[in-house]
Image (cartoon, rainbow, N blue to C red; front, side, top):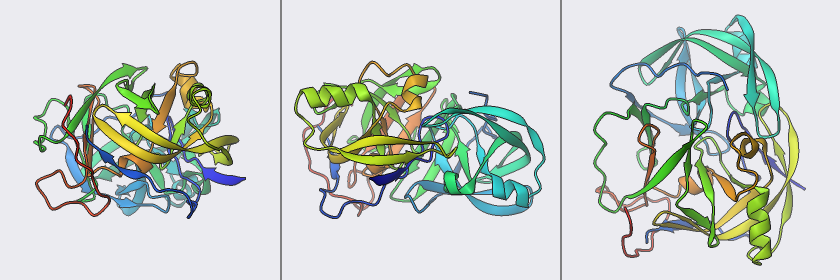
Length: 334
């Protein structure tokens, strides 16, 4: 059994098992619980991001006068989390417990008080951050932005930059080739409904903290009934709280988001807790991770206006991205 390291806070922060060299690689997309602290500053900010060992996005974060430390950017996280070891090093004071919904379970976790946290030149004060073991978290912390319902979070993979601005501000102009996918608000989270997997309609949660994509049992059963999955391989999933479960992984040939097509993407199938939390156990759904998102040049998630914009490589005014190639098809429904 291979291990699929699931580094999850609220919805999903996923690290995948090492890729099988013989397996087809994903094709580029083709066109056809508790309150988190508010984001400071009315004008928003931009900050360069890097990658952790699981290829998830990280940004430099300073705590007080110390740092910077690399925190994972997780649009699926309801609140900021810090590594227990870093909290100890910084001598942060315990501040009660908080309930966390991980991939495998619901846990009451000890929190610490972070007097001041700075990212992108902006400061947030008075954070009560759950403290988790670094080996499970996979970083010094996670920067939760999902609960910022009045914000628009954009990721430019070409420039390696994240921008966070109030949704009321004018949206940055992209090329006409950008695809807009409308979303619904489900228990405070954005869910895309104009999507399908192998022709099967699905609900999609976009999660920048997840390296891999996870489908639920309802989707697995639908695809098996249609004969769309050739084989399944057992993988072990490990949450940020250390919980473990077994999932079945298979290669999905075709995923469609609005007017965008993604081909040959590995998907792990399991009825993980986030599907239960969102009431999505009885209808086909997926948590769309970074393995799919980074195939694009840019991704923008606008929480207040309930929309996601996607720009495939080579479609912007800048030089084509080197991440992947793009097959041109007629524009549709943007």
